[in-house]
Image (cartoon, rainbow over all chains, first blue to last red; front, top):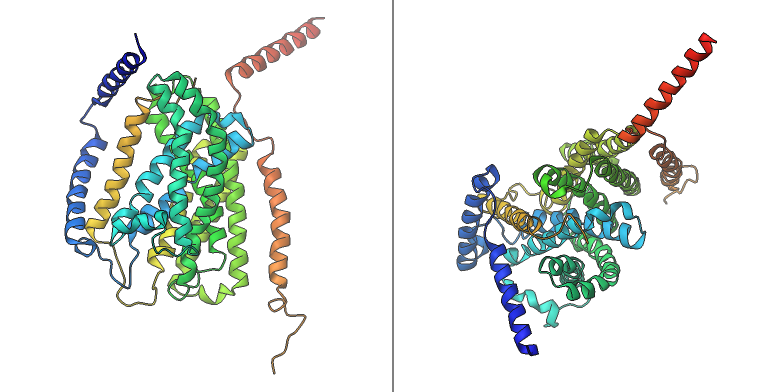
Length: 398
Length: 67
């Protein structure tokens, strides 16, 4: 057989294989499907009107409030929660802590999907989304702007994570030579990915440096890029614990080789990292608090809201993580992860939406269409995640 | 004319230095606390090893009593 015939038969095999894999598996009538399918369909209908009639037809955004929950939750919060990918790849490939190797693939997949869907949600929020390509092709774009850095980093980081995850796809498609080649690229991709992540996690915070008069002084700080970066570390770790807990229940049959003791040791290790990072972050917050003499601002409702975020959803989960690790109580650690995640969501929403133009009498609140589209993005990501983990070797490795 | 008082903890950033020092002290404590022994749940092999050593100890004590 000549080379062309071999290539054609291989392509045919691949096409048949992918066609087989695309067919749905498992039960259709599950609580998640019953909720998510109508939400996704309604979300798609809303998106049709958003692109035909313009962004103002389905959102409460205007010239005074250009950033709604599509940016505040999907992009800014979603990217922080995806921080686990760069933390875990750093721990496994750079620090060589093999204990966490079993969660690398699933964490990278989560990070990749989070960037594709949450950073991809940026397309929905831009008034003229076709201008999105401008930073990449250098069409009249401010090369000194933070947004230039962030947009390039989003693109490059998504490509880096795609390279990190590509050996799994090759393994699934039974392309052994391709898998070996792609696996050889992993370390380079990881190092590039960590560098990009550190810069754009802080870069997202730096975007708000120019909004000083608009953000409440309790949330605005010149150190906001540093605060965004440090908080993304524990946000990512907490997200891994949270998602790991759910995956452990939902995909129990796919995790055959992983025993409970090993899983708990990983969770305690991640919690230790989260406790230390939260402790450092808390002191950064305290230092900024004193440096900017914020004690004059905590006597009103905004002050109480700030204290709830910093004490209730930062200091308390930090102590809970520490206590849980010390006494090996997995339940406390899981509750701490949820509280820490709520704290991150609150912090990012405070900066982008809640404490933004805090002095206005009539404030922005998201329309029901914005909420449905946000849910649609989350549900679609879960669908794709579920499709991939039930077909590709995400929980196991050669 | 404004006065700068060298003993004012707010003006001299004394409070920030104190916070930083307390951070380092507490950070060491936190790391030691997290690295402490803890109540690690014994795995099955450890449990059986502990049980067998306990049984051996009891047998020895009984032997000594008889002797």
